[in-house]
Amino acid sequence: MSSGRNVGKFQQRVRGNVVTVIIGATELQCELDLLQRTSRYFQNGRQGMAYGLPESHVRLDAFLMIYDWMAKPSLVVPPQLLVAVYKACTYLKIQLMVDQFMAEFEEQREVREELSFYMCIALQRLNVQLQSHELRVHKYFLTLVATPEFVQLMPHIMIGLFNSAYICVNSELEVLLAAMHWLSYDYENRACYVERLMAAVRFDCIPLEAVLLLRQECIKINSNFAQLFFLPEIEMILKRAPSHNNIVRYCDRRIWIFDPLCSFHHDVHCPRRSYITHSGFLAFQHALRHADSMHWFKRRQLNPYVHTCRQPHCRQIAATYGRG
Image 1 (cartoon, rainbow, N blue to C red):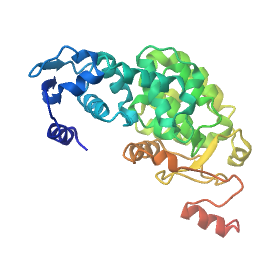
Image 2 (image 1 turned 60 degrees about the horizontal axis):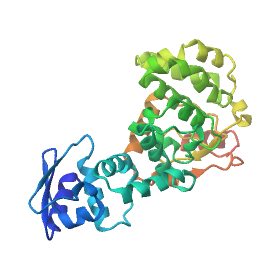
Image 3 (image 1 turned 45 degrees about the vertical axis):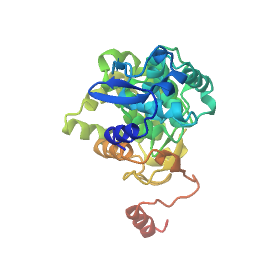
Image 4 (image 1 turned 90 degrees about the vertical axis):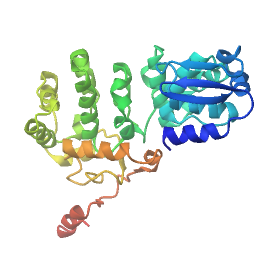
């Protein structure tokens, strides 16, 4: 639902004493009694008054969410609005909602994966020191990488995330691409983390041929990624990478999953599972950004004992050689 339609619906239900709340170019008619019930900011308000709220502290979509919550405190704040709503609540002195947020922040082990991510981002923006293990994501990892907030994660959080044995991927090459995506966002200030970040990537799960093909593609399109591939730290690691794809079967792998939106997905034992292009990875990220909010939850963990790939072309090859 667009903000315009939200505002229209919002205005239709205003009753009783009314004040005007102005956010940017939008004027909202609000029930003063409802505002005063939970917000100390409006405590001395009177009917007919107008309040101009700075967008830097109170975004329009966050205020609309808060106003709905005032009328129905059982409403759940969408993950994408957590930061904006928390910031607005702090500015508007809505202590009850601030307390609810802090209670959630303290119990991150018990919250859903995407909420854990957005809570982590919110706490970072509040300059709250986080431990590296406080971002707990498994199936949500690939969706997390596709969010604009991914590149804002603090270095120690990134390293802790990449060291996790429980993140779910189609291939370890996705972990390498995610690491490079984060590094390239602000390489000048993040160069000192290259060695530790690359040490968290499980290169024993990526055939050398797959990395070299990816590097060649990035060179052709003049990608910033190409420069990262030639860093001494990465060159040293590549020299130790396995040269045959069958070694991948015995590597220290993550949790491998199937995502139907992933065009380059191959099952656990498929010889082509680690050959991912940069353009294919970007297309997958684009698809994830436009998927429904709970798409990540539908990903299925692969059975490591099943040798038949889901891709039709791979099935044909396997059948030809009697492996289907």
